[in-house]
Amino acid sequence: MLLDPAIGNNFYGRRDILALLRKRADGLRSGYRQNVAVIGPAYCGKTSLIYRFTSFLNSKDLVPVYIEVKDKGLPSFAEKFASTLLYRYLDRTDKASKTAKAVNAVELLAKSGKGVKAFRAALELPAVAFAETGLKPVVMIDEFDKLEGLGIQDIFAELGKYIMVQKDTMYIVTSSRIKQAREILSEKLSLLFGNFEVCELGTFDINEACGFIDSRLSSRKLPPELREFVASFTDGHPFYMDSVLLSMEKRAGNLAASCHKDELVNTFTETLFDSKGILNQHFSVVITEFEDLDRRMTSVLLALSSGAKKLVDIAAVSRIKKPEAAALLEKLIDPGMVSKHGTCYLIRDKVFEFWLKNVYHSKEFLFDSGYEPKITRFRDSMSCFIDSYVLENSRDRVRITGELFMSFKGELIELSGKSLKIPHFKTCEIENSRSEGVSYINLSGGDSAWAVLFSSRPLKDSHIIDYISYCRKHKGILKRKIIVTAAEVGANAKLLAKDAKCLIWGPGELNTLMDIAGRHRIVLPVEEQAAAGRWEDLMGSETA
Image (tube, rainbow, N blue to C red):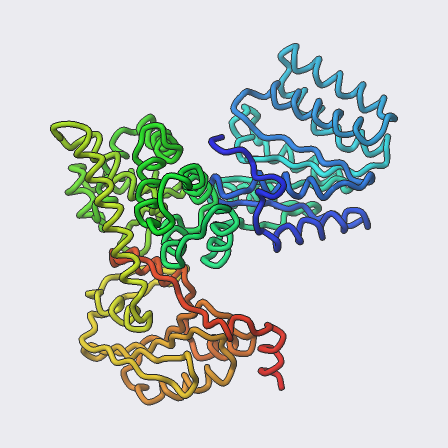
């Protein structure tokens, strides 16, 4: 673990999912047990979330039992599970003699090499402890998917048997392998009693990320455009932001307050380029793990980072045959490193992509006369990257969105499970609607036309009605209706949009399209006056 879990004042955000976990804990107290699975990318704060939740369980009727699954074998897991449970119960009560005896039995089985029996006996402990003490356990298994590597056949079916009958035990599991976790939960832990409610813990959205940045920088504040750059470039990833901001805080006294961009370049040089930098070390471990699986994966990743997105281009740049390149890409898709969108492949992690192109490739494959040119090249690349991002995001977002669609030439893509062939549009016309903050982008080419509604304000049913009326003007050739907004969309507005067969895109979908087109991600505006309005007011205006 490169960073310790965020505890105390270092913990930030995640109010919704914490509220859900506390609600489920209250339900357990009332006799209603609902298990929860928290899944999300590595280093996004799942462990921090569990620690934070545990700090709320200070009542004496619930006992938190946390264990992380590590690659140390079955006996080690059983022994650690048993000793942790006993310690947590003895912290609540001194009347746990039967539980202590059962824990000793687990430890004896583990030390005698009877791993399977020790595992089964360990899973019985929550029921034993509750029966003796009346205190309900909340068992938290961090990275639960790794149980598969402990050597028991159908281990999740085994686990499921105990979960079903232990109705007074709440289970919370976490996993960084999103695809595998969903498969386990839907196929192997789909239980008649004790099913799991799945919550996905992602990166912070742009507003949360900017708030996180402000909370971490105590000595100074970044200008808004650079704060948005850090939030956008890192995709709101708490580990990446924390690494950068911790380094920036250490450097706070070294530069004048006006040198924000230079400070940022220095910080990324220290964390991302320098061999001792935390992000450089992290990505070096990632690339080593892929090379251990198949050294050719590095060539495929380098091809993707250079801008190759289609299979034929990836195969050509990496000098690997197309069928072999396709197989390697599938192996990279499984752990979530690469995503496929129709005929296009993308590295999902933009910081890792930048590191591959500007650090790994430079250090491993460019024959400079010394080390200094490599540092200078990286600093120049980072400086230009920041400048171009700031310049792009200073432009009108509606016009940028129109230009984005115009940049496609008939490619087949997939977004949010929907396949789209984006035509080669010849014209792009932008019109203001009757409502302030709402614009229409009319795209046409050949016998096809698309109409895009772009809004920086919350959308009500009246906005959708106006948009549908606008679309009727192009009824003969209109092929696609898309709504793009980062603001709230009212319930009635969503229903109207769905009935009219409109796609609704937020920042995620639009910026994935930006990635496919090789353009900078943009921050979708939400006008302050509208953003400050209460959601209840929006709903009330629709139903009035």
